[in-house]
Image (tube, rainbow, N blue to C red):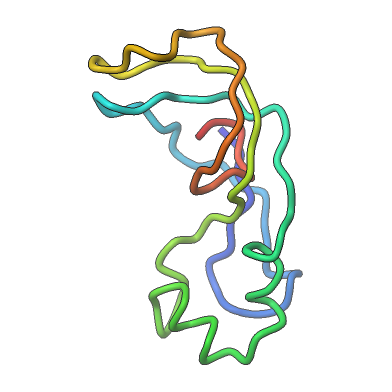
Length: 105
């Protein structure tokens, strides 16, 4: 699957579209095929902060610990974990998720 990632700190041109491992839902999670994602302050602000603040926020001094971006997303549930009762595959959902700039979250 494809996702927008960054493996080093820098300006927005360090972002890359790359193949990443497809996630699978844990027993209390859902897997969502992303249909839309928005860019908000959580996504762009790190590129405007001084580098030391970005490194402290992202959890890695030499490189970002979490290499993916995106928070807000909307899409359709693809799969559900064993204990999930509220959602079923096919349900349309929106919310917050790590790595929203990906095909699946």
